[in-house]
Amino acid sequence: MKIKTYASILANDFNEKKDLLSINKFRKGPIHYKLWLLILDNYLNKINTTSESIMVLLSKNASRKTISLVLTELENEQLIIRTKSILDNRIILIEPTQLTIQEFNEWIQIFKSELNSV
Image (cartoon, rainbow, N blue to C red; front, side, top):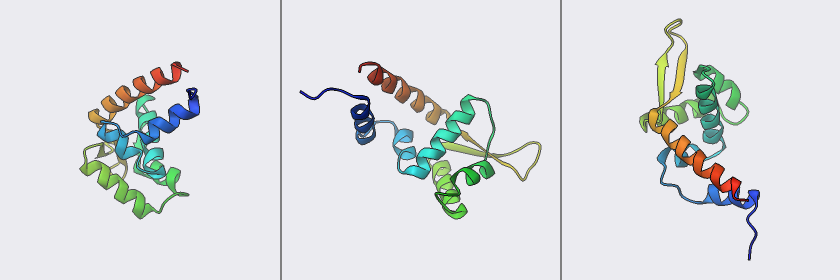
């Protein structure tokens, strides 16, 4: 009988296909995953996420063009919203959609429950 560990829970969570579209999409690869965590962390802490802050964070992992393509893909799938800042039209703000927030909350509750079962 295999003992449940934190490592096995993490591995199972990553390998299992979830019914949650946004979770699957944002965990597609390291760029998507870092982007997901930045956007949600900033959103929950009421910090504006700008396209430039994303470019800086992910600059070691991907080119600006790649990051821009990922953002466009996520926006087309209605997982993020891009808007211009009211204070400065040159600044593009990135926010999670309600679907992304809802699915993250569902996933994190299940994930925390699994971690607490160890």
